[in-house]
Length: 323
Image (cartoon, rainbow, N blue to C red; front, side, top):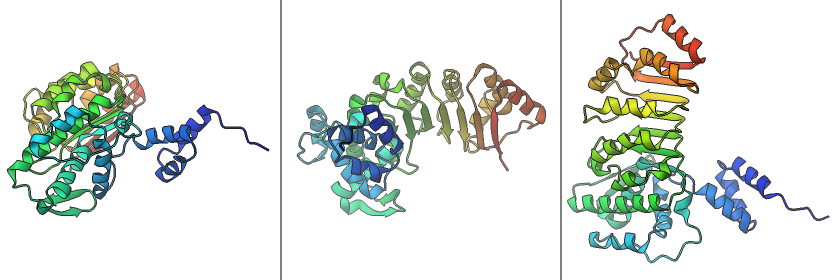
């Protein structure tokens, strides 16, 4: 008996179910063209969450997606990429999660491991690596390749669901600022549902965050993590981002105890802690969880305030007090 082929929708449902099982997905690549096309899209949604040692081969695949202009921009910086064939798929178009920490980490690893191996020392725990960053010429090479790589991604990405702006907490990575192209690529960020913010607050980062309320209004999960504050108007930037998210479900402030001035500013303008949560819950009908972690809160945690929040929206409040 010949088994009838599965409907396309059923195949897609099966693959979506297997999306976190990369081993099974790789096996599905060889069934036929239809399966292969759908599997490639899933495999390349979030490819950067891998051990650091595998980043070079990943980048070589992405380098195939550079256009002529992007390749030429690397020549003055003596970045010699291989001669690549036209890729079978435009892999960069499938990327749905952009995380600056992992992307910048991969690029820096590639340049030091393959382009300047004499300065490379070793990999630490499969995540970070140690290198001699005393060579000033590498500053410009890293900055240029990073900028070109982001240009390629934002040029070809179709829909981004997650954006993480993080920084490598070591010198001299302060120059891995939000690329300038972020400021001109607003349309692909309109679908973001998860936003994680832990950037070094340099000028491009601040400018981009000021644009977030006007380009991102569908965020479900919003995380502010140990932000490096260099501007007095940052508390208002936080407020504007939060106010623009009517569908938010999860709001987290993590490790703000190091930034007393920001805490005071937020507290004074009533955006932080329980007083803020009561006000915020009044206007947000979808919020289900708020996390306060490692924040030194001087307000009174009393049952009356918690009861008010609970009665308003049946929220699940998670408070981790600072000790």
